Each structure stands twice: as structure tokens, then as C-alpha cells.
Length: 359
Image (cartoon, rainbow, N blue to C red):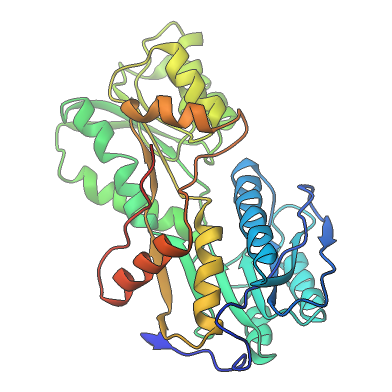
């Protein structure tokens, strides 16, 4: 992909224009629309490949920001549609083409597949729509990708755990969504990190699929045959990992907790203080993407990819996040116009974007 690009298809839009998403409704396949057709702002449609707790937080953050910008006249209307089925690229492609009939100024896509949806994304670009791809990479030069760094996530999911156990001992690696592009980058970086820790032995891998319940079930099936385990690094699922060890009468290892309120509360209430931590991609990236879209609509040249910081929580930050989150809410950085501007300036200068301050 080229290093920089300029969006010219919406030259008539003003700098304050932005898109809009009509209330999400939170159910797969659901669509609802705002009907402010008289506004001077721009319209935005969000196509989501599937629904889980993290995605619902992303949608809620996006809706709240879009509604605020609508009140300011920046957004005219906004639509969110959750594709039916289980992460079906075919169904999401049909959904995207349906959204194109509404002629939004901006289309945001959280893709079920980074490859199968390229034709639908290119069709949207060719129709003069500014396209933002969220939470995935995609080889579609006409779109701008806003995401976190999956290799960095892999590093941050394992290195603190290895340091917490003193760089030696047995571990179990908790894999993510095997076969997905993010997980491939994630796991490849984990393996690179492990080369620097020759005294660490990988006793097993489990397919936790970034889900606490699945991680628990997978570990229950293998724990009886495993030696003493110091850490279970990988794709979150820490609460389920701890529960699996507890049910086996074994001491809890260092784990990677999810960043939702329920998991963080479990972490605090269980009294685990062994170097465990939480790290995950940031659902607040959807808010950042709104301001990326505004910049593109205004004709600003931006890199093809805007890579934002991961969400990381250590034990000292538990109190803050627990005061902010309900049980089903996921932690998200509080992106706004100013912090996204600073992030874009950094990315354009070839420097890492800095997360907004929390706490």
C-alpha cells in the first residue's frame, strides 16, 4: 500500500462534517437509523461482522461520540448494522452493499474476513465513500485502517508474565482465534519472545479463543497431565484460567485478565497479586476512527494505517477502572478530538501514537 493518500470524493464536505450511526440496538442483524436528513453534517454507517461484549462496548462508545457530534452539527445521521450469522464474510458483504444504497459519506467496517471483504470495500470506495477498516488489517489501498498492533499485543500478552515468574519455569500458552490474521501476528511475536527465555518450557498450548469460558474448559481437560505451571500467558481469559486451576486444587498462575468489569472485579476480589495483568485491544478505537474519518473527508493526507496503543491494566489501576466500568463493559481509552489529533500528528511523523491519559 502507498504511504499516504488523499480522499477527494467528498471535497464539498466541510471540515466539521462527520458521519453518523443510528442507534445500534445491540442485537445481531439489527439496524436502526437516525433520521436527521436536514443537518449539514455527514453520515456514517458502521458494518460489524459479529457481536460479543468487546464489540458492544466499541459500538456504545461510537454511538455516544456520534450522538455528541450530531448535537454539534458535525454528524447528520448514523447507522450501525450487525451482520447476521457467525462472523460470515458473505453475509457481511451483502450487508455492506445494502448500506451503500443509503449513500453514506463514510463507511466503517469491522470485517469478518480481511480478504473476502476486499471486493465489497473496493466497491464502496469506487462509489465515492470514505472507508475505514477497524480492528483488522486489509489489503485494500483505497481504505484507511485504524487498529492496534497485533504483534505488540502478542509481546505484551507474554513478556510481563515471563518476567513475573523470573524467566524460568513451565507455562501454558493460551491461543487466540487460530487462523485469524491478528492471531497469526500475535502468536508469531510470542514465539520470538520465548527465544529470549531458554529456561521457560512451554508445557502445553490450549485453544482459548480469547474467551474465558473456553479457556477454562480447555485447561480442565489437560491440567491433570501437566507439571507445576507458573504462568498462562496469551489471549486474555484469565478468570477462566484461574477457575480451572482452583477447581483442580492448584495454585493460580500468572494470567492475562480480560479488560471487562466482571473480570477485573474477579481479579480484585480473588486477591491475586502474583504479577498478573490485563491487556487487550482498545474498543475506543471506534471513537478515534470517527476523527480519522473527519480528517479524511476534509482532504487531509494520512497514512494508510493508523496504529493506536493497546489497552493495558496493571494491579495499581484496578481501582480506577472498577469505578468506571459495569460488569459487561470493556475498558476503553477516552479518545476525543484533541487526543486523536495528537495521535495522527505522531503517526504522520513516524512516531508511536500515545494513548489518552486515564485515572
